[in-house]
Image (tube, rainbow, N blue to C red; front, side):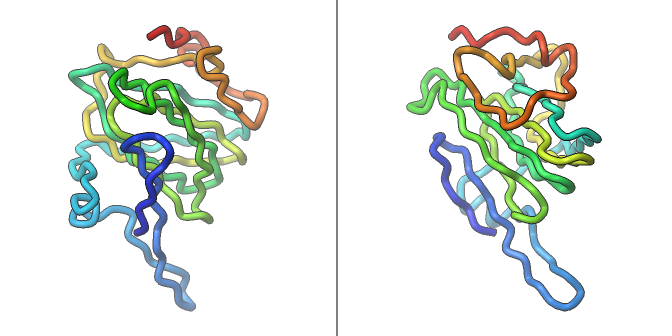
Length: 176
């Protein structure tokens, strides 16, 4: 795996380093030793997946409030997505900044999202699937979100939204 810092403090873009032969490829997507050597979370008690049949589907922008803040390791296993993160840590030098990354099985990228970030994505192709390793169990009482089109951030989503949940549609703008 190759670990690349992003423009947002503590967020890391990780590229798989596949070994290829006539059968296809083999690659590690997680290794406790390598993650620890880079100072990253190594404990992920929750693994989740999401599937979206339609291009343009939007999920986000989600986070969990403390004390249940969560680190996420996100990888697109089918199709492609534009993954967006926002640093909402008031003490961070990159507070209120966002960055977007295209993730797909073809580019072999995954995104390490630290605690204190809002996260969401839009599917760029039909039949997309996303895999998450999450450092904390889901706690409904700590679940929060920011509206995907919040004026505070002016995120540039590449497609018109074709599907979005009622909850995601009505998250508030970020007011900190």
